Amino acid sequence: MSKRWYVVHAYSGFEKHVMRSLIERVKMHGMEDRFGEILVPTEEVVEMRDGKRRKSERKFYPGYVLVEMEMDDETWHLVNETPRVMGFIGGTKEKPAPITQKEADAILRRVKDGTDKPRPKTLFEPGQSVRVVDGPFADFNGVVEEVNYDKSRLQVSVLIFGRSTPVELEFAQVEKE
Image (cartoon, rainbow, N blue to C red):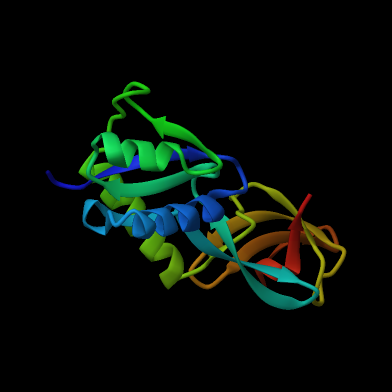
């Protein structure tokens, strides 16, 4: 039998705990050959706090753990009897359905991309009103015209002396209104 990816529903906030418990239980029962990867899909996000860049982790699917495994009665019971696991997602309670390889590859690619280049925690869109909180234009309001996520910069149209002036600012220099 080949290993397939299954989605396990865990208590929210306990995803990492469930992942560690599963890895431990697989080793304890000697089933390493029937299990592959066990992971919580996350990405790194960058935010500015107190003037410093801070990296943190954000879960793609809060409350879910991905498990690569061969499905049989023993492995099903091992996963279902793990503390803080509510069961499998998809299929029936007794016979869960795996996610497609295409879906699994997309999630794994997103996890890899998320660690390669951290994303900003706050997302901006053109046409959105923002308030400048830092720099020479502090306390001015403006409208986002362009967003450059690669450089973490915004093109903001600020009203100065009654005229609309385009200004390039970093994400940390503005906040959503």
